[in-house]
Length: 77
Image (cartoon, rainbow, N blue to C red; front, side, top):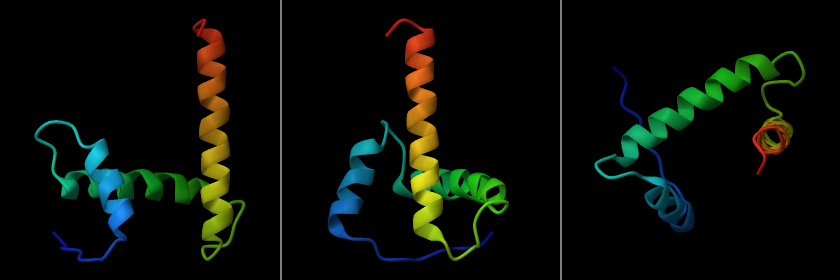
C-alpha cells in the first residue's frame, strides 16, 4: 500500500479535524476524500480535461447542492 505525505493549510486541517467522528483518524478521512473524488473524476472526464480542477470542483459542488435540495423537497424539509 502506498504512503502519501502532503502539507495542507492550517485552516483546512482544522476543518478536517472538525469533520472527524469519534475514533476516526485524519488519514481515514483523507483516504475517504480521495476515493470520493476519484469516483467523481472518472465521470467528469467526459466533460472536462484532467487539468480543469476548478471546473470539476464547481460542477461537483453544484450537483451535490442540487441533489440535496431535491432530497429535502422529497422528504418534506
